[in-house]
Length: 75
Image (cartoon, rainbow, N blue to C red; front, side, top):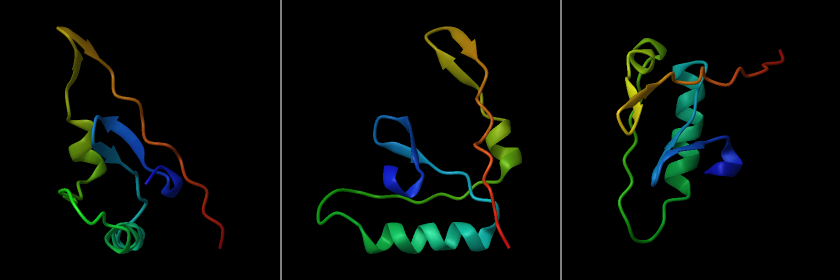
């Protein structure tokens, strides 16, 4: 998953910013094609706005979420 641009968000939770639903579908298909033989995998798509509303804490201290990585698209 790391080779496909995912970042570890929390132990066993990986996130990846996708610029569109079509782009997300590409990564969903790639993930499904590489599922491990054992274990549990869940895929959840959320909007940028929903992700922005998340509150993050380290202990009792609130931390500011880092903005998603900007992607370069060539046409």
